[in-house]
Amino acid sequence: MTNKIGIIGAGISGLTLGCILAKDSKNCTIYEKSDGPSNYGAGISLSPNIIRLLNELEILEKVEKESCLPIDIVWRDNVGKVIREVNVSEFGKLITTNRKILIKHLLDKYLSLGGKIEFSHELVKIKNEKELLFKNGNEDRVDFIAGCDGIKSFVRSNYIKNDSPKFTGYTAWRGIGTSDSKRINIYLGPRSHIVCYPINNSLETSFIGVIKNNARINESWREEGTHDQLINDLSDYGDFIHSLFKSSEKVFRWGLYDRNKLNNFSKGIITLLGDSAHPMMPFLGQGGAMAFEDAFVLGRLLLKIPSYNKVQEKYNDLRRKRVNYIKSSSAFQGYVNHLTNPLLKNVRDYLLKNTNMAMRRTKNIYNYDILEKLI
Picture 1 (spheres, rainbow, N blue to C red):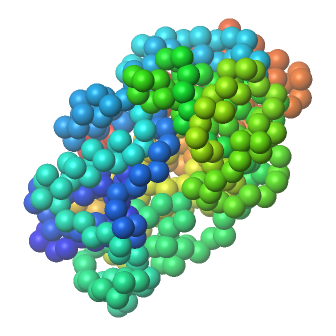
Picture 2: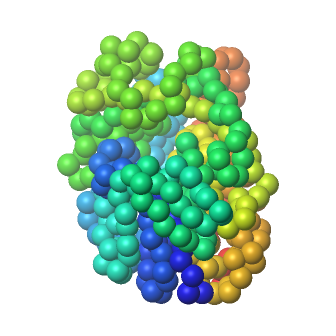
């Protein structure tokens, strides 16, 4: 294909797709509404299904150098008592890092391959199916559009499906503080849970805390909250957690909203990837992984199939079942994490401690190799 591919958004899926296409000298441009690469710090865990793709992109060593290799995963109750402890080797390699580090290395790789990116290009209209109009007055013409513009996707809501986001009743908090732990710690509390892990060898520690309280909050993960609000929402936790909260210079609060599943991620010349295609709850930590997998599938298909329609059909076939399963499982995990009935909580903790049910499901998710599906 010699036609031009337009990628809307310079997040994980957009940059990864760009790298795959640019490596094969395909004519593509990434359009990003921000004036530069994202500098918003947030933790992200890189599971084996992501790590093998970073290796394929030849940036794994660079990302790992600026990240952390946690030693184990520990499930605890809200005061810190251990429910279950598992060595990371049970799952394979896990890397915990800062999202902006990942974005930096993806962008550097894309540019090193000769990839073109236009910052300060916020899409406001697609005219005559192929003409992109931007807020800054610029225009461009493309033959295929990859919608990689995130959970509040302009492309999805205006050209695929305009479904109103539904508030889930969950409020999320995040920040980056410091700790002395090289573990991934998962705290299960009343109506809430907290996940925290180091993101580099200096033990800067990312945390996300989620509470089910039905208090409607804006869907903006860049909106600052206060430490007092954070501690009030998550007051049932011990000294380690409260110390971590206080060590974070800034804390951010947002409401978790959901969108409907899509039966088809494409329409016309547009195909959605990542959060644009299948926004999901963060309770399995697989949102970023699905964005990587999407980009590899679509990118490799665009390289070997000479028909955009057939590319879209194959992409939909390869991705729909996988992402909808992860989306449903993530929602269910939220229910399990926030049980309030004492009997059900005891059953959950017993199963977590004495069986490998959760381990098996996690391994099944991590062991999925999208590269094998593309052979």
